[in-house]
Image: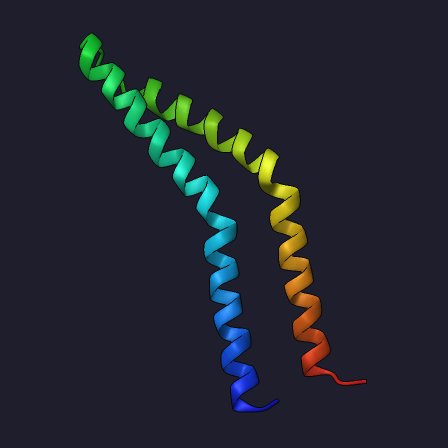
Length: 87
């Protein structure tokens, strides 16, 4: 495998990691901010509410985007195997 190919595959792998994990991170951050805002308005300071809502939101996001993410990772793995073991 040449150096240019290795750099390209590494860059694609890092970008794939970013794109697959980004929906979950965004949903966790947005739901955390929204619950914190609601808690500040209502003067509720119970931490379990925030964790429960974030957990439910992240689980739903993983269920929705899981098939797309795993298909992307599988496609990338097949590409790497094809490059590493030429036929």
